[in-house]
Image (cartoon, rainbow, N blue to C red; front, side, top):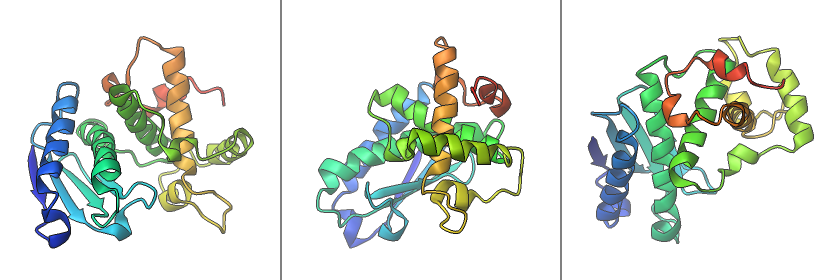
Length: 213
């Protein structure tokens, strides 16, 4: 693992804490997934952080992870740092998947990739799901999944609409994350011998085959 922390007054005072949380996440994940040599970049960028958590992550490929934090958060050490750990677990699963089949080009592949990453995070932390995993009511989920079915194999789908929301299309924020979390969750319930850590390279269609929809 290579770690680069932005040299700025906002994050410099947390440099040691950030080194520790990155090393902890890497050690926990590398025992389960092939993420050797991953590069992690951490920067103060509140506009790219999830407001509810003070951190956001992005993995563009199988080699790099970008983490944006709000270092001005009043509870940075007690609240944001633990969320950085959870974010790194999620993004490192993406790293491993990128090195296999890739993130995916269709809506179905994106749903499964995100669902697997969040279930992997829970596999390690045994924590409660993230807010985006439970962003819909049961009624909303059924209705939106019916709409998603029409686009599952579309490689020109709008990632922005499905995962971050669209007022125009009446798609709530985080819909894709919730749908993906539930698709993967159903597969895991029907296959209790399987774990997300062992599914990083699986075919999205195999996971979807267990879905009741």
